[in-house]
Amino acid sequence: MRKTHFRVIQQGEWLYIENTSNLPIYNVEVYVNQQRMATSSQANKFYVRWDNNQDIEQLMVIGYSYNNNRVVPVAEEYSRNAVNMSQAHRERNFKAGDILVASDNVNEIMTGYMGHSAIVVDENNLIESPGGYPAIRKDSVQQFLEKHPQHAQFRPKSKEQGEAAASYAKEYLASYKKKVENGTKKPVFSFNLSQSLQDPWEYIYCSKLVWLAYYNGADYKFSNDHLWFSPEDLYSILKDNKDFEKVYEHKDVKFQLDT
Image (cartoon, rainbow, N blue to C red; front, side):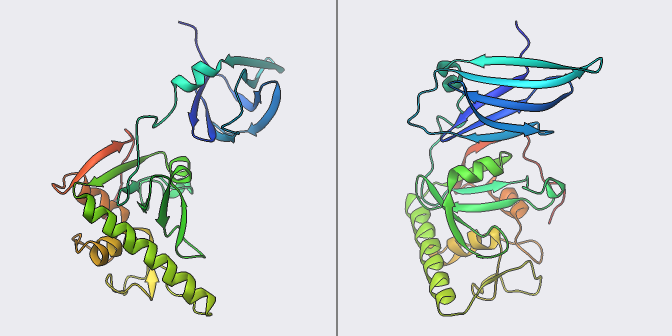
């Protein structure tokens, strides 16, 4: 079998490019239909946005490495069918109330220690508290998958509970936006350990948002073993929970600490 140097995966409107080569590749260029779409230096994994309505007649990935002080290009061409055959999550779907829990972070130093979580509100969107301002936002499921590949997806067995939790999350976001419009930027994103888990308006963080959505929306209470309800708590509770089913889990999901 021919040795390949890159892995290419289609994820909706994104192309995921991963350097799998043993060569010391220092720069990668991506061409779609002979047009350069992206270049990346010193990155083993990156994403290229493309128009879903645009046919990929040709996809070329070119990596550059040094050999005996000479620049050596390594080029691989992928057909449209080859890219489509490797689509990530092509058989997955997302429903209101699904919970996404990741052990990785955009800041790689925190991977395995902090993590992230969000609640899905419809087939394409979720609500999350990603940090900073705004403290609560609606965003696409796709961006979560792109930023946090090492994640698990859990679905409540009760469709009604899932929809109720998602409805609360949407109402919570709407109330937050009204507060901001009126000059009150509450809740504030914070991991303050003195905060009440049941108080939605002083402080918020990602996994607390999921807890509130199920507690207030679906009358379902997740237990909490320490001062704050972390993504690790969510993952540990959900992975063996009779009321939820695991839809998907990346093989590298792992939390380093019991938080």
